[in-house]
Amino acid sequence: MSSSTPPQPQSQPYTLISPNSTADLDRFMDIITDSFANTALTTSFIVDNDNTPPPYPSPLIDADRRRRHFAQGILDSAASNAELVHAGDWSAIALWETPHYQGKAFIDSKSRPGILLSEWRAKVKAAKEKHLAATTPMPSRPSDSTPLIDVDSSETTPNSTPGDSDNDNDTENEPPSSLPLRPYYHLSFLARNTAIPKVSGSINAVMLPFLQRAKAENAPAWLEATTPQAVKIYEHFGFRIAEQIVVGKGKIDHEGWPTEDGKGEGVTAWAMIYD
Image (tube, rainbow, N blue to C red; front, top):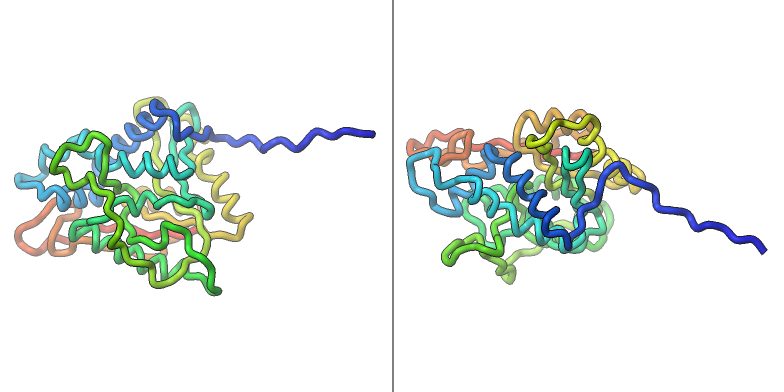
């Protein structure tokens, strides 16, 4: 009678962040807040949500406010088994929603959006339905039954103050998606930790294993890039631009701040697909 050793799980070049590790989740949120400090799309959503008064740029949109913009969506994603990972001893981090993810997508975190966020949701939703539509009927994952928002938007925090409309979990009025989507990987966040020295290969470590999984499963990967620099990085990994999306034309400038002359060029972002 012979015995055999069961196959061991293949080791990965990244570390999976536990949804029960408050310290690790706090560190993840700190890195995201720092990395997206000057992201125009994030600025536009916060200003629109808060009705931030002039002057612009506004000192009211500080690091604490931006952290609250991201916090609860990240916590909810982690609790719903999204894969939050880091590599190079926190040199790089990413948040992936896989085809088997059963929670609300990070990009769907806020249920009562402002005008700009609603515009973004509608345009991203249309882009997904165009490029990810299923060719045969199949059940959609939970994130496809709710309106879409940007990759760096989440609007609740456990310590939101009274009157802060970010503290919003009402979902009863969310309309269903009109088209089912193919199973896909969604990259909500990719960021490098600028507070520590760069570790070579750390970005690859939080990207390539998921793209390899997507390829093996014959599933596309999807993301929304918020800067031209990010587009170039994702093109390096094999993503291509599916749609260029402009939000707030006539209302905000290219940095996301309101304009009063009706001539704001709006904020540009890029929906990208890996297939």
